[in-house]
Length: 381
Image (cartoon, rainbow, N blue to C red; front, side):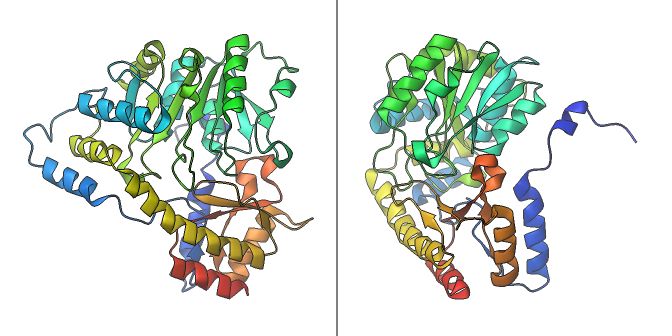
């Protein structure tokens, strides 16, 4: 056998990849599993988005290679979207890079900026891909703990007591996944100042701004943030386009140019039709968000009832596509979700997949219909 690269020994298969195989086997054996683990939107994109991709198939350039920076009108649509919803002025020519989903941006940014041995500040709890990509590129992840007592915000004072001399990059993710904690302007201001003091590039991963959140915010709205910050965003959750793989990274032209050097060697451009659909999505009126959130609000109320039935507690001020719930004392996350899967045929995500600070918590997805959620409540009761 040919030996795999050493970098593969630093990471494991993604938790959901493994766990969903187990869930799939249960379903195949006849078990009526309710999946509340994955944040994959089950609702449809706007109709005009679907029409746009359908109509684009007949355009003369539809099936050719596309530009590495995406269509100029897509970048213009992103710039307009950021201006309208975040009050952020961004140059569509050189401060925006469309991505095939924001997840690939995590790898592209890491490849562009990290050398072997560089250190990266990673939130605990946080999206597991920050840690795995850091390992894959040979850098060292340094976890910084978040907890409920500080509303899941970074403790800058504690961070500055640490040796930051090798830290080059810091991942932040607000609104926060998995907890749903909302950032304040003060928190973003402190992060920008921290980045300046220590010459660290901060990346805010921001795909959940419009789900059950009346105040979408961007770290780039802070004065001077573009010098030391990047922001990732995505159309997956906001417009129910997870499978389309449309994201973006925004920042100053030098940072975008560096990331483009990586990306242009990784793919040959996003499919034309996907870009045309994305442009229409970004033009959606406020009514789209009102309608979307009316659905999620009803679902969240039911998930709260499910959490109550499981004797969990939760923060009603949290936002996003999930409900982050605290288990009763002394219960372990993975043992608990395995028990619920076995006894009630409901799959819930254990908080531990997001880091050690997730122990004692579980995460429910809102990506299930009201009927399914009512069935889950009935099973638990």
